[in-house]
Length: 154
Image (cartoon, rainbow, N blue to C red; front, top):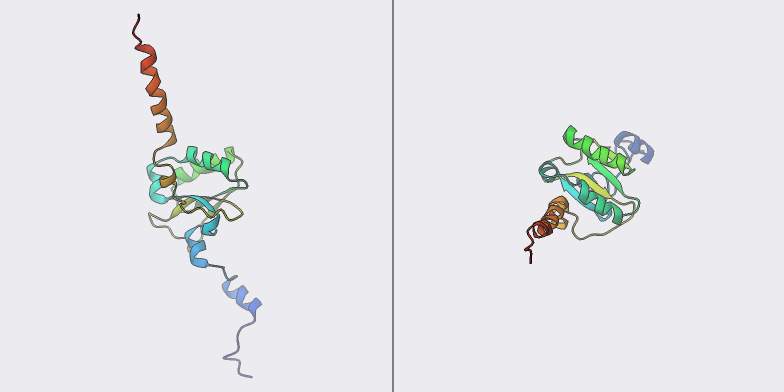
């Protein structure tokens, strides 16, 4: 028997190299989950530019059994902010710190995902919510307030 060409026992291979992943590139891009399970994705750049807690609350109401995935390379202030949000909402969360998760500016920093496929065509949070929800609410409240106090008396 030629031992140099013999394949390793699968249990020995798993012990040496870890369990094989199904679609590993996709799982590395989406913090360990599959793209079809992602509800919304926030990149590092988007997380630095704006707070998405209100938008996540809206999406959380639509997705039962949701989970928040946070990249370990996220700034400590942002990470603690979203951890606090997850604790307030009693939302399960996971901080992904493995080195094989992508961490460029446009890669996923925060993901709201489900335990079953959602198959959304667009998962980018900025395309779903182009303007901050708080800004939209402020604009709607400003529109009727001036009219209330600037009435013409007849």
